[in-house]
Length: 59
Image (tube, rainbow, N blue to C red; front, side):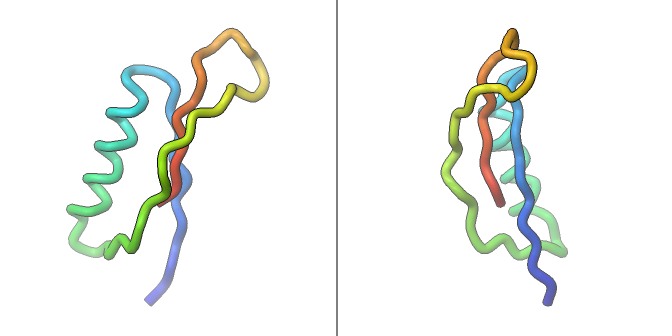
């Protein structure tokens, strides 16, 4: 079995909801067996600073 790590991040259109939805899709996928996910972290944007902070996680 192969192992992968997926990094997720969002800062627009309800970003926390988007991450939760992505986690749910991974959990419901018939060919994936999610082991665990990280906590969600809030981080400042890199590059242009005139944008909201990012919600980030790994799965």
